Image 1 (cartoon, rainbow, N blue to C red):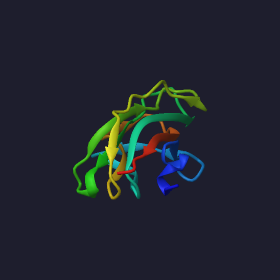
Image 2 (image 1 turned 30 degrees about the vertical axis):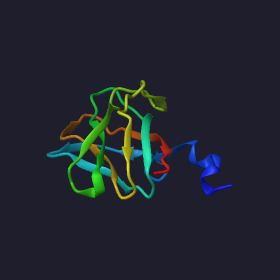
Image 3 (image 1 turned 45 degrees about the horizontal axis):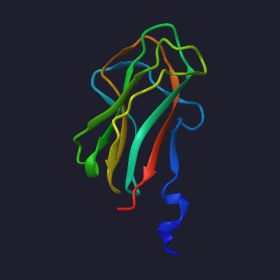
Amino acid sequence: MSQYDSAMWYSRKHLIIDGGGVGLSVSGTNAAAADLYRCILTENVTIDEMAVVANTGGTAAGPVCVLNTSLAGTGALTPIGTFKVGTTANNTNLPAITVASTTLSAGDHLVLQVAAGTAAVTPKFTICIGYKTNLV
């Protein structure tokens, strides 16, 4: 039996981004897009889903957040999904978020950014990104 016969290579995995258990937070004015989270992938993966929970929502317009990829961290960002958390009740799942199925290699970056603009509320949110490991 080879190491690739293991079911772990074909099962769904999830990356939880939650700001240390309290939720990622966005507030104030951003003159330009700003990174909220960046990680370097350690294996070849295909990202194909994203879910967001508003830990603390609000009743006013919130910021637009963008999930991007950066091939080998070269600086060029490619958006694969967006969401907005401002007018959402506390502890509520956001409506389904469409994510472009994207295959990435080890060494590529996954970057969550808040877009330029002013946030009328200070939402806190948790993100779950679904992916599968690719063998090659």
